[in-house]
Length: 157
Image (cartoon, rainbow, N blue to C red; front, top):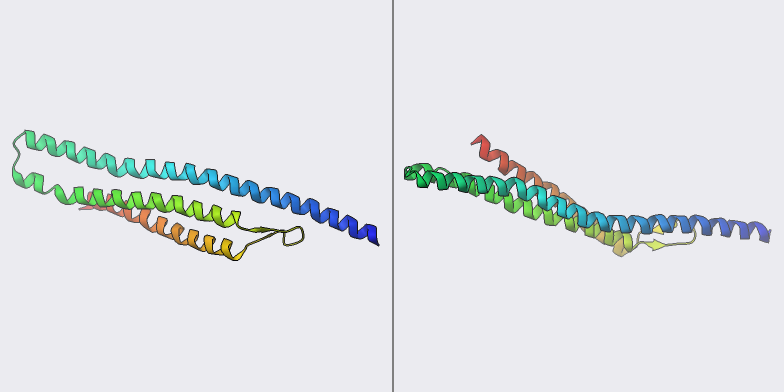
């Protein structure tokens, strides 16, 4: 009977070790994704709105150098403000994306690793980090959507 118990403990150990390795790998990959996704989000969101603002400034410069009327330049202020607001929303969405991944990684790294089932258990602190991460996740979606709305709004008005 003792031998059966020892085999079960050994099996639990092997299974627990494998689960722990997978968990640690997830934490490491999530941390890498935090950096990569933050950089990609910043690059893409800023290119869209920043490029539009630069193009508008170049266009306004051309209008002013051709002695265009004051009304033509004034009519471009509202679209520029919308692009600038879209740029601000894009920046906030980029920050939220980074914070989302950071919180998820922080939550995953604070899980309790057990040698018997359940092998990985979320601690109270892990649950808190995951909840904060979910909040930033929702905020990132809303902010990115708002950024896109401001971009499209310029073309529809």
